[in-house]
Length: 75
Length: 510
Image (cartoon, rainbow over all chains, first blue to last red; front, side, top):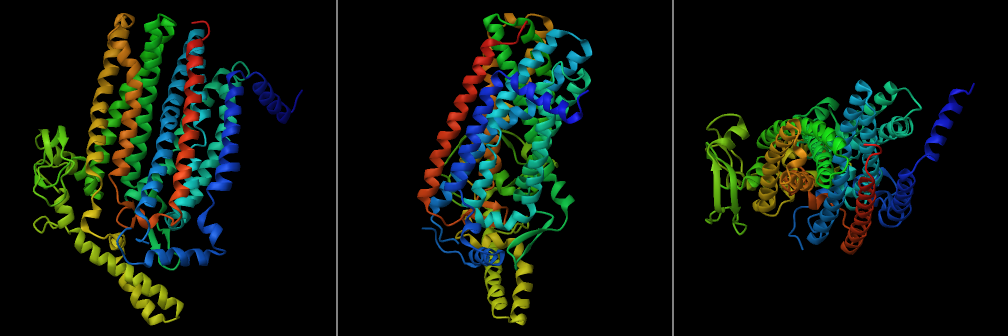
C-alpha cells in the first residue's frame, strides 16, 4: 500500500498528466511569471529605497527629508 | 517634495490605475464564480444528477481560465509601490508588508491544496471532500482579498496607527481598529459582493448566448436559475453595503461625497441627483451653475449622508472655504496647521541631528499637536483639495444606475426561467449577454469613485500623492506604462480566446 507522500505525489502527477486546457494555462502562467520577475522586476522595477540607500536609517532620513520640505509650486 | 514634476505624478497615477483596472477585470470574476461553482456542485452532490456535475465542471473550467490568466497580476502593484511610490511604501511598509505576505503564503497553500483537489480530484476523492475543497477555494479566494482592501480602506480612513517622526513610518497602535474600521468593512463587503454580481452576470450572459444559439438549453436554464438567485441576493447586498460606503464617505471623506454628487453649496435637506449633466468648467467659489441639467430626489442625499432627514450636507465650497455656521474648518486654515507641522518635522529632524534635545522635544510637541493636518501643509492652494468633480460624478452615477438595473434583470430572468419560456424571450437574451460587460463598467466605475474621489490624497489628509511619489524620471514611468498596457492586453486577448474556445465547445453531455 502506497504511503501518504506517494499518494499525494501520484495524485498531482496524474492530475497534471490529465490536463487539457490546463497545459496552455500553465504555459501562460509560467511565461507571465518569467516576464514579471525576470524582466519587469529585475530591469524596470527596482525598489528605489533599497537600491539607493544602504541602511534603514538612511532610508528613513531620505523620506523624512522629502516630508520636511515646504510646499513649492509644481513645475 | 512638492517640486516633483506634476507629469511624473500623473504618469505614476495612470500606471497604477491601469494596473489596478486590469487586475480588477480578473479578480471579481474569481471571487464570485468560485461561489457559484460551489453552489452548482452542492446541487450535484445533493441530487446526484450527473447533468449538474457536467455543468459544474464546465463553469469550473471557465473559472480556472480566468484565475490562471489573472493570477499574480496584482503583484505588479507591489512592484509599483517600491519603485514609483517609495515614500508612501516606506511610511506604511511596517503595517501592510507582513499581512500582505502572510496573505500571499496563505493563498499559495490554499491554491496548492484545495485548488488541486478541485481540478484534479474528480472521481479520485470522495464527493464530500471534493465539495469541501470547492467551498474552501471560494472562501479562501474571497478572504485573500481582505487585507489588500483593508489597506486601501486605511488609506481612505487612517485609524489605529501613529506616525513616528523618528523613522518616518506609521506604526500599528491597534490591529483590530485597522481591521474592523467601518470603512474597511464596507469596502470589503461592497467589493466582494460586487464580484458576486459580476460572476452571476457572466453565467447569465453565456447561458443566454447558448439559448440564443439553441445549444445546451437545459444546462443554460439550470445555470440561469442559480446565477439569477445569487446575483439578485448579491445585488441587494451591494446596495446595502454601497449605502454604508456613502455614509462612511460623508463622515470621513465629505469632499469625496460632495464631488460625486456635484454639490458645491452645502444645504439642509439636500437632494440626491438622479440624472444630470455637470458643468465641467465650474470651479469652487465661482458663480457658475454646477449643472446644465439636473433631476433630484428631494432630501435623499441628507438621508444617505447622515441618516437624518433634513440634515446639512456640506458642499465643495463649504469644505474648501469653511462654513462657520456649520463649524466646518476651511482648507486654508488646515494648510496653515499643516505647514506648521511640516516646519516642526524639519526642525525636529535637524535638532535630533544636532543632538539638541530641548529644541527637538519642543518641535515634537508642536508636531504632535498639528500632525492630523500634516498633508495639508503640502498643498499650494485650498482648491487643490478638490478631486476631479466630473469624473467622480459620472463614475458614481453610472455605478448607481447599473447597480439598480442588475437586480431588475435578475428578477426578469428568474420570472421567465421559472415560467419555462426564457428561451423564447429573444428581446431579453441579448440584454443578458451585454449585461456582463455592463457589470465590468459598474465595477470599474466604482473604483474610479473610490480612488479619483479621494484625490489629492494617497493617505487621507496626511499624505498627498505628489509627496508619496518617488522622484524618478518620467520617461521611465511612461515606458513601463506602455509595457504594461501591452502585456495586460495580450493577457486579456489570451483569456478571451481560450474562454471563447471553451464556451464554443460547451459542457460535455448536456
